[in-house]
Amino acid sequence: MGLEPEFLTIAKILRPRGMKGEVVAEIVTDHPERFATVTRVRLEAPDGTFVESHLERYGFHRGQIILKFEGCETIEVASRFKGWWVKIAREEAVPLEEDEYFLFELLGCEVRTESGCRIGIVRDIMETVEVPVLVVEGEEAEEILIPFARAICPIVDSTAKLILVNPPEGLLDLNRENPSSAPSRR
Image (cartoon, rainbow, N blue to C red; front, side, top):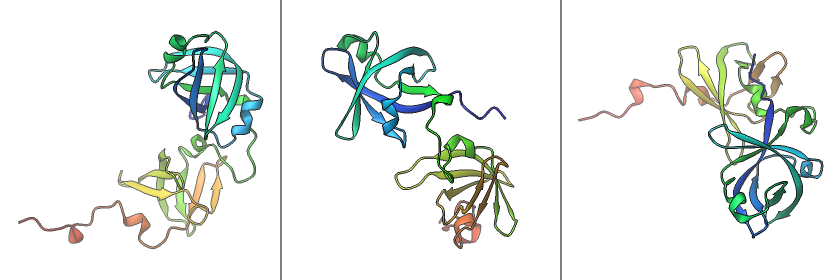
């Protein structure tokens, strides 16, 4: 389907640190222990340009990670990478446990209720503090937001591209316009 990315993001560079080319980055992987095995990385700018590099060393500090890349020896060079993403090749990803998914695997999944009613197709995923939210394009092109929580999405088959949901009453109607409940304008 072409939805599987070649590289996975593990950190976002926030700013340079010190004078020797180190950077401070936000960790965006659920497996920060993975930095112990990372050597080759792709540093990717917001515009899609990228640089291949090697991770020389890393260290954790106050919930963030300090990274040192090969060839990045000064604060001036490190400053160029502010806002860039640190990515690894897909084949180097940490193996997932049963019932764990890469969010990109959910894109394109058909969403149905456990009783078989078709809701729509997952077109996007919003990451929130608590749980990701599936952005589902409904039958009439409306946008339906469904929290990706086990209680609401108990069955996920990423291979079959199917998610069965058990939504709380009213959840599926939250994003649909209801003219009778709209405030009147005078």
